[in-house]
Image: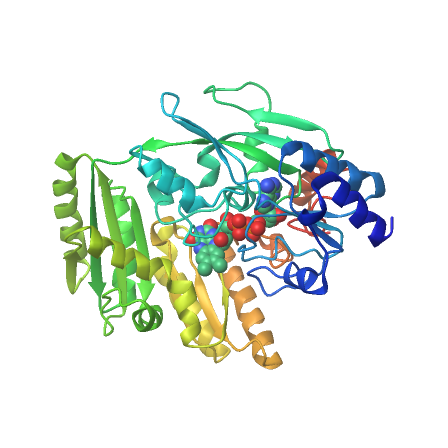
Length: 458
Ligand SMILES: Cc1cc2nc3c(=O)[nH]c(=O)nc-3n(C[C@H](O)[C@H](O)[C@H](O)COP(=O)(O)OP(=O)(O)OC[C@H]3O[C@@H](n4cnc5c(N)ncnc54)[C@H](O)[C@@H]3O)c2cc1C
């Protein structure tokens, strides 16, 4: 099918205004938050499951690649249309369809912005927990695609622990449901398989999500350390004592400098690292847990532990943490963010190897990450316009993933594999592991049209 026919057929399905194909549109939809670039043949904005099903049937008819897209904030090249084809942008499918408090679920379309759902639920005294730092702009469909995490996922689990059902358009345009509101479903856990599949198995058009009651009380602390090892050791010690805070986030001096220049969150500019430790739950137990954490911090040479006195102070601490990726570009024009995960007791050793890697390539690396999960986010700073630096940054990023894999960890905690980390899949999976994934992919997508070339190396 030539491009003109494709565009005309798409217009028939979704209407004139909902197909984009200008030079500028095709260039823009060739980007996401990764370093990769591509170009689709057309972009389509469906308004319903029926329209998605018709678009998929059209793609199936002519084996046209099809790439689902939320807000394009993924950090691994997951929405890059490497083989042209159709980008399906879910921005119009952004309705919260049902808030079912008695069953503690919500049903939503995939284009709902994560924070919009969270703000809506707060009015009812409820939470949808997974809170990626990009929550102001990321979509719930994108969160499902990447199995996103966030600070509060330490205690409550990442996206896969909160999606209990999905409506899915398959490669040939047929529509199926996986999971549902009932607690335990027999048969294969297809919902589990979908979460984190990066749009390679089908397009999700509705999602059923678990919600929880908002905690009675929250206590947020900033623990300030003069040595990064002390901060890392505190993380393992807190968990070893049997305390499970809602968050255990770490930020090093490089990142604090950038954040303070940008947000003025009140971080100490002369410290080596800080931990943002948040406890939540019933008021009674929190005081005791807070005291225990203070004692553990002291055992690990903490300089000071400051308590957020009110909601405004708490919001400032989180604004700093959530704005960290954006703020870092004050130091250099570009950054590449790692996402390796290691057993948390390995944090001190792995962090020092990360910093050594920076020295080896003469690149500044800042660290801001979900320390409680052992999920590192080294921010490798460079200038994208400098080809040499760009290559060095890429090499450093790959070496850091190897360090994580060698430490018994893995190459992605929450940002997915996409295009950028396909080769590194060999660090953690054997050829037969990968072959079993290819078989799953073939079962869902025999013609390889769904986000082709992503996740699984050839
Ligand atoms: C500043 C910044 C901070 C970030 N912080 C975090 C963080 O704290 N934690 C975290 O986990 N991530 C973080 N991210 C990464 C990113 O925001 C997440 O991966 C997010 O879930 C992507 O959402 P999106 O709507 O942008 O999805 P997109 O990037 O558009 O898509 C992501 C994947 O999902 C697929 N997809 C999208 N919609 C559908 C659908 N309806 N059906 C099937 N597949 C679909 C796409 O094909 C793609 O593979 C951050 C990114 C940035 C830029």
